[in-house]
Image: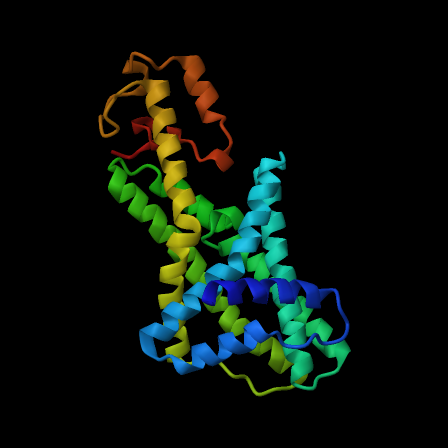
Length: 273
């Protein structure tokens, strides 16, 4: 039910975005609320995680489909983040109308919510298919770790750090927008809500973005080995001493785009060891 309810929330929000009148609450959404409220503690957090996965999956599929159709990586990621923003805006609009606010103020609020959701995801998010400019820059640093298990663990940690930062900022930003636009008292998140976001994000991020992160690392490692041969990455030798490394290979590798996060960044020439 949780996954389906998350998907229902995404599509209901996207539909509401293009509709002026508030759409009726779906039976799935009502059942989802009842189930969530009947749970406590970790069970509630785990159920919330299934909602998040179901809600974010369509945006990831949009990005993946755009990539498969030949759209450049950054553009595909932006399209996925935009889909997420549209759905978030629609849900925020419905929520504002439900509380009795007029359509103009509701539309302003929802537009800012959707824009912040898409923008923060593109800037800080830890789901690779949806962007995360800052996160991807950090990835280029941990890519120099030689030990495969530690490197993958560090990358998953960066994913989580970026995603939880984005989520927590959004949690504090939305009540600020309601206060600014609707005149509500600022209702900052409680410590319980803060910690719930941390737990839910820790569950969802590896499932939504972890597979992609691990696959990219394996692909980069294969690229490294195919280009420079079976040489230990912790050797202190210069690239010029590696039998299969030529000046032309180095030049080509150094100009490979960051979007592919090639493992050339993990070579001893670029490390401080």
